[in-house]
Image (cartoon, rainbow, N blue to C red; front, side, top):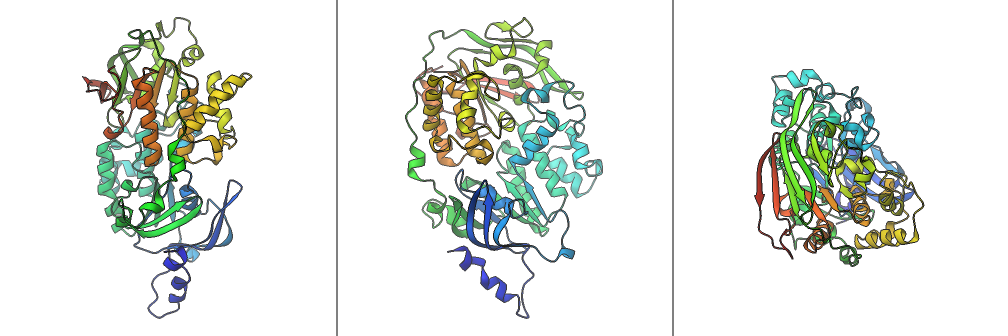
Length: 518
């Protein structure tokens, strides 16, 4: 069914009848959008009426975010019209949008580089959770207070936003948008980065939000993340609408299944480039002894000890706010509180003279936080090559050999056609893949993958997990893998460190189903 057939001119003609329904909350009429120097979604007709709950679904790079941002006017319609109800019916919060981009903007406002958010002086002027939400809402005994209580935000009201974990920041932005009581609420990948309980809580909250008259537009690359009360679906691919339907039509074999699938050529990828096999297994790469970290009077790590040896594969798990991000910041040489703790990396204690860049030369790192601080103007090839210089931008003349390595990893992750594209023109999922290529190209001794599949569609996520499994199984890297999705933990991961409220809850062995035990 085409967009025109679905809600196009027929919707407009019915307004002239005596029983005409209320006007749409937002409407695209024969609209063509303009983003990143391209025409997208030519001739799109789409109206969101009161009471309707929608999802925009499509693979990485399909244009989902562009279509979603058009609803709030952030992406211009160069042809056709973007219409709202009469001005007197609107408010500044008529359409609210929550995305990874908003999260990045919030963090970057107070922390201009990755290490900045952990430094004691950096971010002292940053808003607290209570400042951002309004302390009246935090202290309210009514609906606002109940919402924040259910999201677990009351207990961190005095924490600065730059000190929050990825999942905590996501919950904060969603809560802020809900407190503004918009008529249209656009949520991009709202389940990504949330722990299991927070996902369940959001799934319980959304039907109540819809019942208040808010129309929700959920944007996702994963059909399984289209949850109630969402019922209507628009599928996109290649900057075009490819189908309209109901949520039930997304099931495998259902009418819309093909409309959201990625092209077979995209899923295959190239073979993995050559990588080293380590022969020094057993050497201690990371040793954290009784580490504690405090922010804003809150102890976020409390007596954590952990040893990672060469050749081991670890999963680091725990709820949002359990201390995973802070522990990783000590290991990745980003957090200056490492100097006040006993943290040893590659045989050197922090503070004994080894530079941060000497440490980072041996590390590969993928995370939402690292993605926030990548250079939006750099091309994909430049971004991958920047890993050889261990900086956010190129610092040395890249050799022809390094360029060949970068191109090979880009092909392996199906980024070969995007090598000359600036990061700012990529989707969130494509930027995550480019960051992974950067981490792998430098052939690090320790590879830290923090939510590497966040924002990826199912085929790309499966491709990344197969790649990690092969690298892990052949002993190419020592791996720390962080996720809230148990199904995403590669079969080759042999050890699990579980954190709860900043403390080690358990260290476990898990059965290996890969090529070798760790």
